[in-house]
Image 1: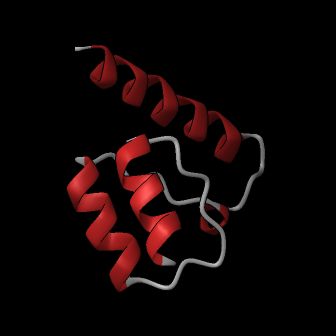
Image 2 (image 1 turned 180 degrees about the vertical axis):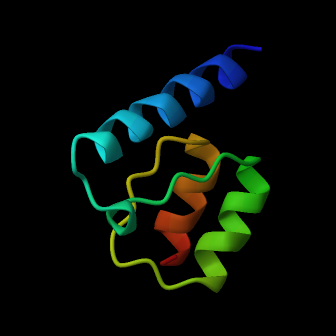
Length: 66
């Protein structure tokens, strides 16, 4: 599947960033289903979120205030 290929590329890109000196604590990469991500975001208290997953989940979080 395409999403599996994209996640491998993203993982390798993060490894490159770490090799170039980016601190490991600066980013968390989470590859999961939209429903799992929604639960994770509701339970956690993320300071900043770059959300590139399901637009359905993103819209529900936006409308319901996260």
